[in-house]
Image (cartoon, rainbow, N blue to C red; front, side, top):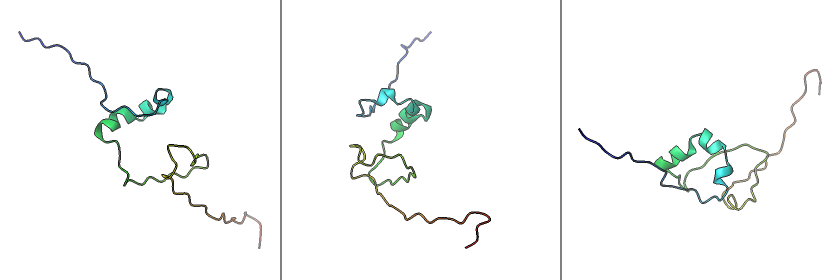
Length: 81
């Protein structure tokens, strides 16, 4: 008979965000498991189209490329130019 003590596992990488425990979506999208594979790189570019981003947030300062596009109105149905 062979017996081995059961081992508990925990993540090696802990984000330096003091509010990480309040961010419910991280476990929902398996972010903790993903961080075991990689923590990203400065060379990765992610595009997010969102009107609610706080580009002045300390975590995002100098990391957000802000492009302000001129809104072009589209003609409504039934309206002739």
